[in-house]
Image 1: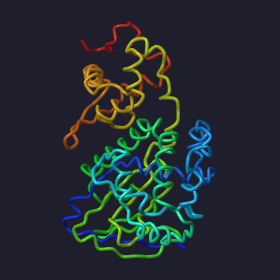
Image 2: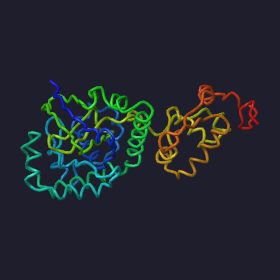
Image 3: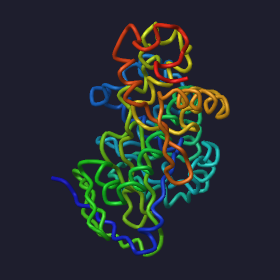
Image 4: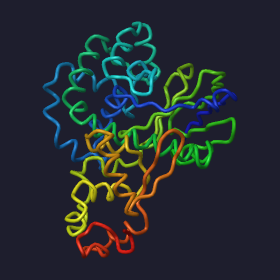
Amino acid sequence: MGGMIEYQLSAADLAAVRFAVSPLNETVLSLRVLQNPARYPFHRRWLRQLPDLDRLPHFGLLMSSLNDRGWSPDFLSPVPRTQHPSFDEELALVAGTAPSQVEADLAAIANPVGAPLGRLLSGLRHYWAAAIEPHWQQLRAVLDADIAYRSRVCVTHGLATMFAGLSDRLTFEPPLVRITIPGALPRHVSTAGTGLTLMPSAFALHTAVPADPAGPPLIIYGARGVATLWEDGSPAPPRALANVLGETRAGLLIRLAEPASSSELALRLGVSVSAVNQHLRALRDVGLLQSSRVGRSVAYRRTALADEMLRSDEAPGFIDGSGVPPGRP
């Protein structure tokens, strides 16, 4: 049966819900995929790319820190202090965990395995370097895009709509956020000004919270876009369109079926924001993109004209090769 976790948000907390991306949490959560690959079909390509992890120092000990359900002890997943901490910053926090806390957190997930902290840190560092760090920019792009999307939903439709879209296991009836987690012990936590952190994850199937009811309020949820995370790239645009616009601009149109900011696109493409902005402005000037301000950022999205051109292999409207749709100077 599902345990009901309730976070009762104060007025101050309702106004200060924040998002964070955690490389350490993603590293720990990815161990679940290794433990039970069949439950994570979207990550098969990633699994096939991994080196022989059993050769890594203390990898077996690291895997043994999870219980049979894939739950990990809280001390391995501290709540990020900033929106984008580095892996080393987070690992330094874990290094300061008291031995008594290590034992308590292992006991909280019913894991009797002894786990010396120093060896776990070594195991984490080697596993991060071998399995997650080579793909971190790709992972972070998906997580940042999710946060940008949730932020736009919140600005446009309100906090309740944003919460409702995080997971079918989560409901929000102000001031209560309720999360159903099968097998978890029910709890009611008043945040009382301590805040609530929301963390998208590429390796979370549904939702997760700290095992310790006294831990900082945190909700981990599955990020959008994971199904395409390990694809080689976006689908190729129609050849005729790419010939006229260029591969980069045609590729941007493919990516902008949903709104995205120039900073999101730059991170995904591995180029500078100024370079992306130049392409986006050119596409907007000829009527292929529309832009709207959401908070402090500008979101771009394809227009109906761009959608129509992408549906056609012949890229109608560009047969003269000018790069300008008919009717525009």
